[in-house]
Each structure stands twice: as structure tokens, then as C-alpha cells.
Length: 391
Ligand code: APR
Ligand code: PHB
Image (cartoon, rainbow, N blue to C red; front, side, top):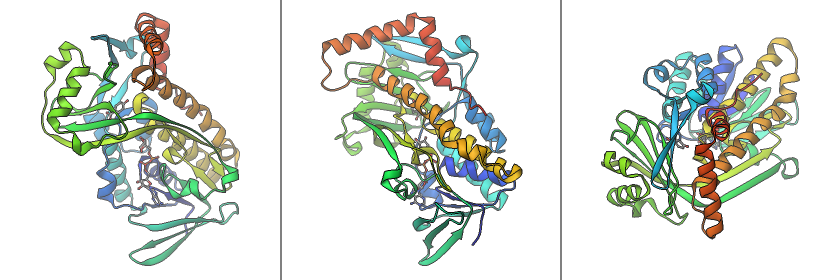
């Protein structure tokens, strides 16, 4: 089989890239190791920056997002038993859209089906070859039979554990990592959200986050030890602990119910440099991970795809490799800003084991400064709402 661009992974990065390239007349094939239902069963983040919404518009997959997505003008920080609103709209004139990553993925998969572009689910043993030459290949097995894709470029959109980054010789890639000494226990429930906007809570028992997917579906998280097992948390135990970490008004408004998903996720910061190796480009979680506190994971994947799709379109339409040559550098500038912000939000809002009283006082002072300084709030709002994707 021949194609122009082989895309590894059908997460939001791979699917969005595939759709944008297809619209531009660039032939591509997506290889995904899991089934469609498995991919759609993963519960991930839910806050979209304007730049991400713009890209979904461009890809022609945003009808449902505009109908069902919730536009949020601000978010709340809760500490010392009180809530403080950061009003993005008033501070910088911008908003975010709350719409689940699972739904973004579903919309992209449906668009792929309608377009007739090729996507191979349950592709096993995917391997990358000759990407340092001009005729790279991708091999895979499907239903026991081997297949080979001859292509011009490979886009590694296969997430943190994918094969693409691992195919690069170790001495060609430099990695930067911070693993946090805690995780997030998350639940999804068909209950109305406790508040109209997200609440990020710093509490002595640990961080908590109140988020949502719609007016009738909520997503809540608790900071927990990495050894914690989701099975050991009954719904009742989860709600009790959440109440302990929220302010009185939130506790009074909290509607509890049966959870429909419960899982523990570790928190990590990770960057691989560079993002290009000959004809292979990494994009999304394959190249970088952020802790979820800043809601940047999906948005960073979208910004990589923004630069990569433009670079490939330029290459095919104008026969110039300028965009391809600048891809890694352009992405990394944005990636490191998001890494910094996500690390900062994580440091500000969590209880770190082994932090002494001095550390707690500094955290309190920083929160106090933030909610009383317009300049600090503008800086937070700019980063949370997202810097423009740029050219
Ligand atoms: N071969 C083929 N596909 C693979 C392989 C492989 N060897 N390894 C992984 N994959 C697939 C995974 O099954 C997954 O569907 O690649 C896809 C990667 O998707 P994501 O992990 O969702 O990564 P990405 O598209 O970069 O999206 C980034 O998603 O993970 C969240 O927090 C992250 O919000 C961020 C966004
Ligand atoms: C979510 O709704 O899952 C969510 C929202 C905001 C975050 C992280 C996760 O910062």
C-alpha cells in the first residue's frame, strides 16, 4: 500500500492531522493498535482552548462542539475555605470551551468514516523503517496478515507509550522528565455539576477538582497517593473525601450519585527533543506529557498538529521544506510554555509529601498574591486560556 503520510495512532492528534491533510488533498493512512470502541472508552480531559476550537472548525468537525460545548468565562480557585473567581473574559477577553476529549475523538472518527479516508484499527506490531531516508515504511499485522505502508512521511501520534519515539536511536533524542509524588483519582457521574465553572481546590488533605462534561454529567478528581487503587474507593468514600476538600457552599450544592467510571492516573511532566527525525515527526503525547492541572494535554497536541499540518501542506503545495525544517523549534517554544504553566499550577494547588511548614506558607502566600493581583491573574488567564497558535 502507498500513501503520502502514514499516521501512527488514532487519538486526537492522529485523527485531527489526518482530517486536515485529507481536506488539503494529502493522502494519508491512520494505523491504530486498539479498536475504535477501546479508544472511545478512554476518559480524558475536557477543556479546549480557542485555538483548538478554531482547528476543529477548520477540520469541519465542530458542529456538535458548538451545540453541546459549554463556554466558560472563568474558573474558580478554592483555598482557606473560600472560593475566588478568575474572570478570563474580563481580564483578557477570552474564554475556554468545556467539551470532552472523548467527544472530540468521536466527532473526528465519524468525519474520517464519512470522508472514506483509510484508517486501520487493531493494527498489531506496528514498526517504523528507514525514516532517515526519503522512502520510509511502516509495517503492521492485521488479522494475522502482515501489511506494509510505503510513504513519504510518518507522523508519530501514538501517545506516551507508543512505538514512534521508541524507534528513534537513543543518542538522537534528549528527554526531560519530572514525576510527581501523587496521582489523581477521577470519577465520572451522571449528576449535575456542583458549580457553573471549574473549581480547583487546594486543601490540607490534598488537591480536588470539580469539572464537568455537560449540564448533567460531572467529572471530579482527588489528589491521592500513587499506591491508591480505584477499586478501594467506594462512591460513598469518594464523595465524603471530596466534601472535606471543598468550601461550605460547594458542599451544600454537591449532588452525589453512582459513578460511571473511576480510575487513578499518575502525574508527569515530560518532553522529548527534537520532534523531527528525518521523515518522522512526533506530535502530541508521543513527544510530551503535562500534568493535567493546567488542562493543556489535548491543546498541546492540537498545536503540534497545527504546525505539522501547515508544514506538510506547504511542502506539497509549494515544494518548500521551510515549515518542516522549523516544525520542532516552533512546537517546542509552545510546549515549554505549557510545561512551565502546568508545572506551576500543579505546584501551587497540590500538597507535596515531605513539604515543611515553610513550603505551605509560601504556597498560601502565592495563592493570596494571585487572587489579589490583577497582573498575576492576567498571567494565569493568558496561560490557561492559551496563547495563540501562531503561524
Ligand atoms: N501502534 C499504533 N497505535 C498506537 C501504538 C502503536 N504501537 N501505541 C499507541 N497507539 C495509539 C493508542 O492506542 C492511542 O489511541 O495511539 C493513540 C495515541 O492517542 P493519545 O494517547 O490520546 O495521544 P494524542 O493523540 O497525542 O492525544 C493527546 O490525549 O492522552 C491525552 O492527555 C492527553 O489530552 C492529551 C491528548
Ligand atoms: C477534566 O474535566 O477532565 C479536566 C478539567 C480540567 C483539568 C483537568 C481535567 O485541569
